[in-house]
Image (tube, rainbow, N blue to C red; front, side):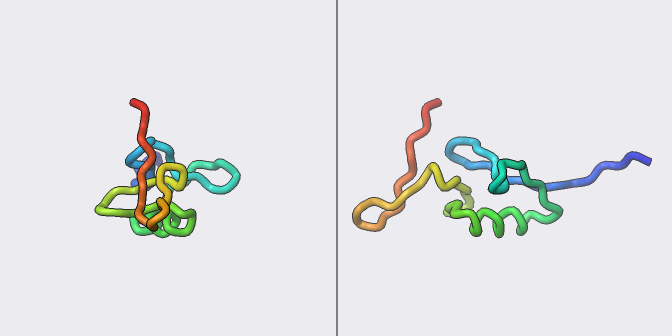
Length: 72
């Protein structure tokens, strides 16, 4: 029998990079909350319902969050 399975993954709202394991493997989760938990554990920023990979944000000299501009 073949049947559909709903899985969840995450990507950066700034650059579109998908969340991956340390070895570069793409991730899929059975529950949405698991995606955010892994994002938090890998230094992604979750702010105002948006998700930003660790390459797309940093702190400035006054500890304000700064998003990297994206070339589109």
